[in-house]
Length: 118
Image (cartoon, rainbow, N blue to C red; front, top):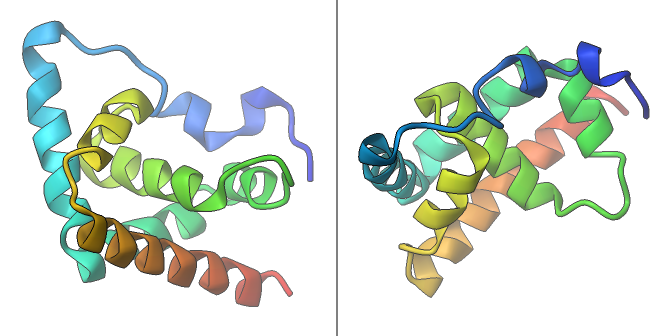
């Protein structure tokens, strides 16, 4: 799937923005907390599927993209206004069991998108 970048909702959001240094740790902590709550994290990612149809279609049909990572970044961007690079830092705060549960939540959101777009 292809859309011009101007039609991709993620570029009109906060997903790729920079934030002041003094605010970064707050986003890192908030994303880690969201990812540690699989139900809330999955709900945020399903929200991304519903509210960002163009970006989601492009991301989840690009073979070289890490789908779980993208949907997680999108969910955190919508739910917490966290930029992608700070969400990645929040991910690093999770232990392996927490990462596994977050990945399962991401897989569920991806399945939701696939079922809606079959």
